[in-house]
Length: 68
Image (cartoon, rainbow, N blue to C red):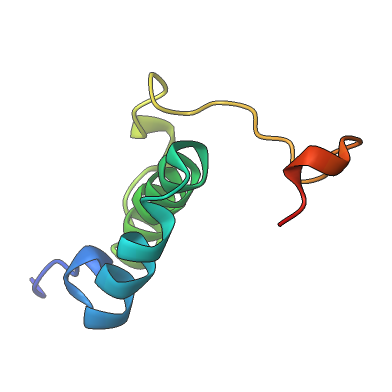
């Protein structure tokens, strides 16, 4: 059996997380994506993904306040 991969251990992923710490919603979304990708890379069942952390995120905003 091959070793299980964890994308969270990649240096670039840690750097992205440090940038996203400024916006908690983006960090949460990124962490959820990492969980899904980790399961996919490791050929695990995606239905086992923790649904408690899965939320609906809006990529677009009608408000100009959200634009940096």
